[in-house]
Amino acid sequence: MQKNSKLAIVIAGVVAIALVAFFVTRSGSDSTTDTSKASGNLEIFTWWASGGEAAGLEGMTTEFTTQNPDLTFVNASVAGAAGVNAKGVLVSRMEAGNPPDTFQAHAGAELSSYVKAGQLEDLTELYKAEGWDKVFPADLIKTITTDGKIYSVPVNIHRANVLWWNPAAAAKAGITKAPGSLDEMIADMEKFKKVGIDGIALAGQGDWAIAHLFDYVLLASMGAEKFNGLWNGGTPWDGPEVSKAIDYLTKILSYGNSSKSLDWPDAGKLVTSGKAGFFIMGDWASSQWQSEGLVLGTDYTWAPGPGTDGIYQWLSDSFTLPVGAPNRAAGLAWLKVCGSLAGQDAFNPKKGSIAVRTDSDPSKYDAYLQAAMKSWKVDTLVGSTVHGVNYGNAGMAALNSAVGKFYIGGAKDKAGFVAGLVAAYDADKA
Image 1 (cartoon, helix red, strand yellow):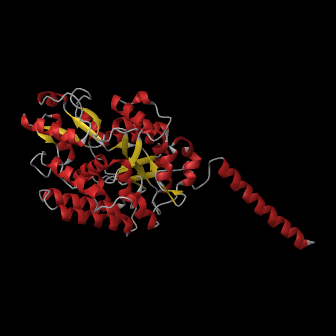
Image 2 (cartoon, rainbow, N blue to C red):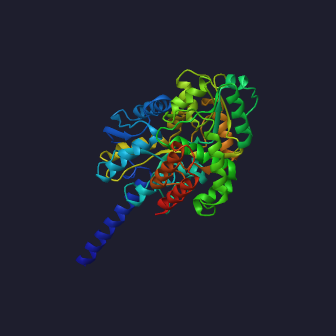
C-alpha cells in the first residue's frame, strides 16, 4: 500500500510539472523566449556605420531602449564593402567561440554555413510566440526555413534591381524617359557620352558592387526563369545565356568612370552631381542621398532596372541568435524588436527599405518605398546573389572575386571569367 502511495505521488508530481510547462508555454512565458528579466549589455554586430544605414539602425535602437530600459546597446559595427569586411571579422569570432549577442546577416543561403556549423539557435518557437508566422509573408518564411527550422528574423526587404539617374543630366543628354531594355540603356549611355557625361557610375572597391551590376545584367538578359536556373542547375554557367550576359556587361562597363576604386557612395555622387548618367544599385542608395540632403524626384529619380520591369530582385537584412551568446536574453529582446511593427516602421523609412510585416503603415514611407511595397506584392520575386539569397559565403566570395578580376583586367578575359563563375557555383555547392 505504501509503494502505491509513493507511486501515486510521483505520478502526480510529473503531471503537475507537465501542466505547468504547458501553461507557461501557452502564456508566452516559456524560458526559451522570455526576456522579462533581461539586463546588462546587448552587443550587436552589424556593418551599418554611416548614412541611411546608421539612421535606420538608430531608429530601431531608440525603440529598443524604450522597450528595454535595463539593457545597454553596444554596436560592434565593422564598416564598408556591403558587409564583406564585417563578415570576415564575424567568421573569425564565431570560430573562436566569441559570438556577439546577435549579428546581422542576409536572409537566405548566406546563413547556411552558420547553420551547418551549429552556430545559430532555432527561432521557430519565437516566431510562434510573437505571431510572426501570421504577419510575415509565407513565401519569405519558406525561403528562410532550413529543414523545418528558422534561424533569423528579417527586418526589411530591399530591392536590388533599381536604375537611378539625375533628371538634369538626362535632360542635357536628351533623355526623356527611363530605358526599357539593356539595349535601350546602352543607347542612352551613348547619349550621355556625347555630352561629356560618363554613361554609368561604377563602384569597384571590394568587387561586390560590380558583381551586383552583373547579377542584374544576368537577370535582365535572360529573364527570371533562366536566372533562377543558375542556382538550381537548370541554366549552365558556361552556356550561351551567361555568355550573352557577359557581352552586355562588357559593353556597359566601357561607358563607366575611369577610376576603378570608388566605394558605392562615391560612385553614387557621380550621378547626383551630374558627372555620370545611370547607376545600378539597391534602394539603400535613396536613403544615403536623403541623408546628404538630396530630394527624391528632384535631385535623383528611379525606375526598375531596364529589362526587369515586373521582377523584384530582393534581399533582406536579418538578425540571429548565436549559440553561446553571452547575454542570450538581451539577444532575444533585440530580435523581438526587430520583428515588431514598431521596430520595423521605425527602422525601414530611414534605411530606405520596406518592412517585412504585412501590416506595416505605408504612410510612414516615401513615394519610392510606397511603390516598392506595391511591387513586392505583385511582381515576380527573385533573389539577389551578391546579397546572400542565392549563394552562401563561399559562393559569394568566389563570385565577387571572379567579377572583380574581369573588371580590373579591362573585361578582356571572357573565358577566364566563365571559368571563375563555374568555380564559384562549385564552391557554393561544396
